[in-house]
Image (cartoon, rainbow, N blue to C red; front, side):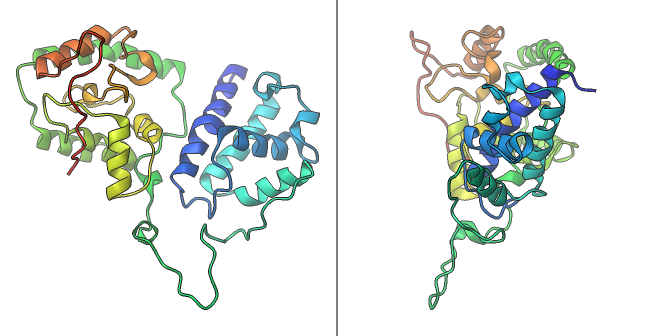
Length: 296
């Protein structure tokens, strides 16, 4: 059975990260996303799973995450996961939450899409709407945060990644071979697609999650930098598939969760990898030159 801390982490991940990413990407798992912010998802789920016939604030003290027991946490997690899978209708849940609070929600049929039909006029269909699949199939993060055991395992393999990169600093990896490795792996489709984009970044160049998400949104499906970043964490093909070539949007070293950031334990190694490839930083720690954006 999961511990209280594990349940809290799971709930926090679902309403603060995963659900907002689904909403921003307009994932078809829900016919309409009436909210996009984490606190709105928290309100909806807590009202329906904990408050039930009253606002959750009349049942729990704030912050809810610290005052829920295991049973309540399991209920909110189950409902949040049902929203993620499409088993629960977010519009209906939102309207119920608003009614509990004495507010009127915008009436919308459960199967109504984002753009309502206009009588007498043929609804225009954009290029984006024509696509059946959206970003969720490829670029959204896993619905399960890493357990402590898995995190420790990734920490152990970090040194192996660094050593492997050091052995190949004078070589250019065969990216076609890396693309085949990714394609033949058993990772999920969205991770395959995202990691494949890393192979497009030339040696001596760098890119950012923002640049990648901009390219994806313009050429494929709408997404966000957070979704791309989550999809690329714990790269199993490093250093050949070069996640070290991704820097922060402000030009600093960056790095997921900080381990490979300027203050992280692997900052020195990341600097060494990039320097060996020709990437340079100024005296303030900002990278020189624009990020790579041409992911053709």
